[in-house]
Image 1: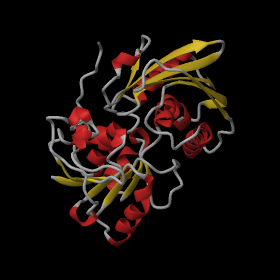
Image 2 (image 1 turned 90 degrees about the horizontal axis):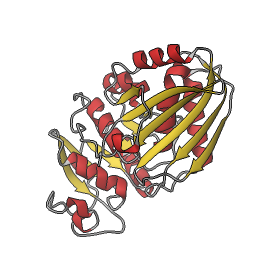
Image 3 (image 1 turned 180 degrees about the horizontal axis):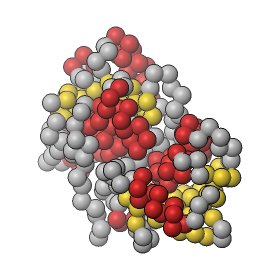
Image 4 (image 1 turned 90 degrees about the vertical axis):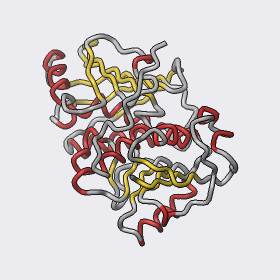
Length: 300
């Protein structure tokens, strides 16, 4: 059983984590802390009514093996705890995003899964939801050095749960990962936002030039994601309801005006945040990666 603490318990990401972890067979939530709330969690996260009796409490880092940090105010607390306890692991959901944090691992499982399993990193940084959707659309091309020219991204998402990042930092996050995969990539990225149809689901249209025809690229994507548990390539267009309340990313590829368009759809609170964090936990602790994440899509 993994003993777990969660900081920033008042925010929506923490509430989603608790919802997942109380139904996870290998997780035990020992405490949930908050700088602004007290009493029962269900008073703030009403979906937990009848599900658990947890109350907000002080962060007792010595009582846990893993901390999900959802509050940037507690990042120093986590850093200090990691410094004196080499068995503690921290999964970071609050800090400004990037892959250059010293001693940490970027928590995109579709590129770093084997390192999380074998190297047992103590600190893992969860990608932003926007970067998650865009990178899953681009990773196969980047890893095989097929990306050419600039990348045009349009994101459809009504972000109501994480206002700590801006579009420039998202672009830098995406470019940093792409250049880590393909050091020769010299293109830029443009990012536009449009209103989405959901406060949970993020849809991204990603348009690129690539040195291959669309059918070959589709085959390549299917092969790349064949052994991954949560990312799937579909022949038909994807819909927001197909991923709502799941840890899946669904991709669709098509050709438009000489470019490749990849449509990527995720539930931003799950695959783009809390669900991915639980996936990372499963890998770090040697569990089957889908444990606790077999979730039903909310189609209607």
